[in-house]
Amino acid sequence: MHKPATVLGLFAGLLFYNYIRYIIDDKRKQIGVLRSLGASKTDVTTIFLIESLIISIIIVILACIGSLILTVILNKVFINVFGMILTLLNFGIFPILIVLGNKNQHLRQNT
Image (cartoon, rainbow, N blue to C red; front, side, top):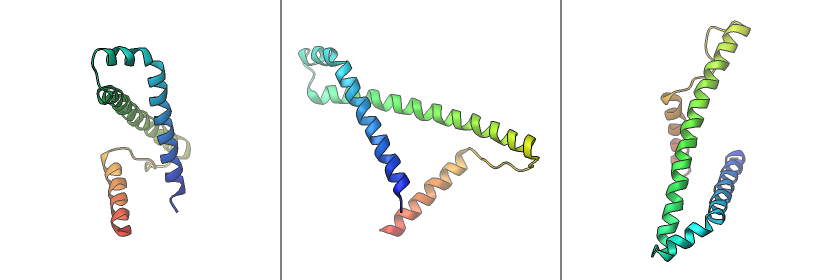
C-alpha cells in the first residue's frame, strides 16, 4: 500500500549510509589524528553526524527554495499557455502542514 514511500525511504537511507561511509573513508587520516589527540569513538561519530545534519539542513533549504521557484514558474506557464486563472501548484507553510496533518491522522488510525 505504501510501496513508493517505502522505496523512497529505503533509497534515502542508502544514500545517507553511502555518504557517511564515503566521508569516513575520505577522512580516515583526520579520524586517526582526532583519536590520537584523545577523542573517543563517540566523539568522532558525533562530529560526523553533526556534519551530516548540517549538510542535510542545507539540502532541505535549497530544495524548498528550488520548489518555490519551480512552482512559480510552472504556475506562470499554466496561466500564460493554457489561460488558466487559478494556480495549480501552491507552495507554502499551509500545504506542508496539511501533508503533515494528514500523515499524523493516518498514523493515528493505524494504531
